[in-house]
Length: 155
Image (cartoon, rainbow, N blue to C red; front, side, top):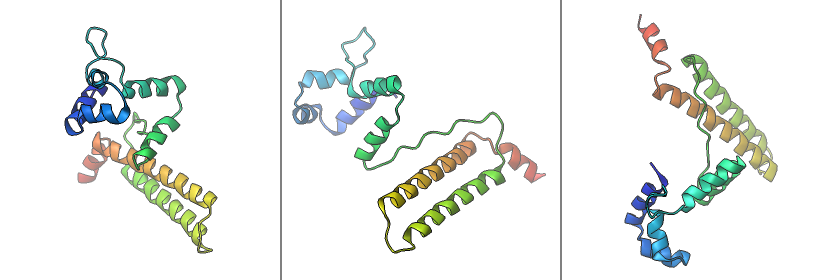
């Protein structure tokens, strides 16, 4: 989906007039954000396009992480797809091991019945790693990387 298409859908739920008023911008500017910025139309680079350009030129994922935090969420990188099908058992074991590692960090942090700032950061770091490993497993399942393993198990 293109950014202008997303904004067009967003403005169906939250009116462009309301957005213009709350952001202190002209209504025509808001409407232009919801049009293609292909040089031929009347669209203009919208905030989503500008954030994307900023991310590309800086290469700094903290920009996306910051936005996700403002939306009460967290950013997890999509895993790089592997050329060879992963082993289902090894993938499952990796998730279980990473979860165990997270629990160990939590257990250590809570041993004194409190969690310091550095302990909270360590918990967050392990959690982010676990989410990435789990996402890689799920993506592998979605694209059928485990199909060959499943076929062998049926024999």
